[in-house]
Image (cartoon, rainbow, N blue to C red; front, side):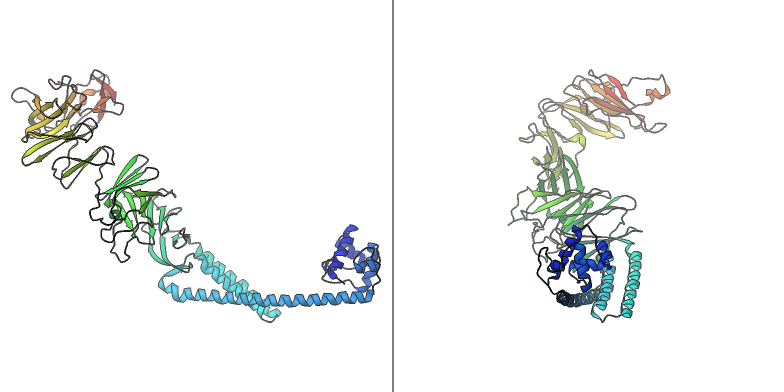
Length: 633
């Protein structure tokens, strides 16, 4: 007799009558649990119940015992019940043996887990902790404690002989030790925030632990078995708020956060080197990336002469070596003041030459802009020619847009900030004042002294061709202005004394080949003078300005010419004394005019050093006839 078939048959008949297990049990004076066991084949009805059960279903006992309607095969009820009960006992014995086997297996597994967890905890306490290692996350200590507690409890219950006292003692110990472990965990784990992150190739592990009260950040490295890491150092500044991290290479991770004063801070964790020979001496990352670099977005990085110029979306920023901080052998952070701006990392394809400490051709770098949250890293490739067989003379001059640079007595300029052009001549290491040179599409000029001679060097085609003309050596050049490629003006001083200067305003109409005196200063003959701080500026070939600073430096006059420097007349602002606040008579220090962004010529007038209430300034402008009108206070 098939107990499973019998149980299924009873269930079908009960459901056909719309009875619940409880309803059927009440009719037979048995519990609903007994009915449930019959239907699941876990037990068999008593022989005295067979006939009443068949009557309830409206079938014969033969149909009931055969588990099939219409089957009238005679069955010995007593023998059938006996066989069914025996079959149930055999099934129950099999299940008991199976449960015992599973109990032993799980008991052994629990015991092995207990031993393994104890080994881990013992290794930590006696081997790693004395060497300044900690679990990468503080909670792991208490998780392993709980694993020891639970696995010890399970192995005891499952492997040792059953006993009520044993079970009570084991259960009590489980509850008590778990409570103690949870209390310690809450007291200790809540004090620190743990950050754990793995590199993309899973070979390097970043571990940071942040004290929630002080904000102190401890940095861990030298990970062992993923579980433990050694405290390497504490970051210089503590954190306030969220700490962000960004892997920019598999062995370079930038950490960005704000300190307690809400200033942005940056730290870079590095795990590898880029040296061609791992035994190379320490190298400077800035020096290894000399040259020009470009990204797919046409952003650029220029590294030359100890300076790093970054051009992102058309905006340029320049960083000196003093504004760079190196981390490990593969990354630097660029600062403005104390504010971190960028991270530059050497990618893993960078190989640093063992002789010259230069990244070989084919190496790329990554730039990460430092914000108060993670940003997108950008990869740059080197666009400067390199010969990997000879990097000894690898170098390139970089000059800012419309700027100049002197190196090894050679002068270089650039119109676009990318291509450097050498200017003919021999130049000492000096800085030209803004008034002493000009870089423009229509006229570029410099001058230099050599062998007691002075040479004027100029180009009218953006450095494609250059001309040199020898000019006077004796006078000192104060200012040069070219409003066009052919016409230019040069203010020179023959002598100076106190705040007074004697000299000439020279003019050229042939682009700088010849210079003719056109104006000798202000005053009566022969005592015409300039101010020692006099400057010139010209609107075009005819209209220009010159300042005359008084020796006492309390006021400065402004003069204008409209006839190409043949004559000058003093510029005067319109005086308005209708109200005290509009009293223009107190403003007597005229500054040199300039062309504003809207192409209007304006000039500032201040109260000078003798002002009663501090140096106030008003702005005036010229109209189309170069008459003065007020612009704004």
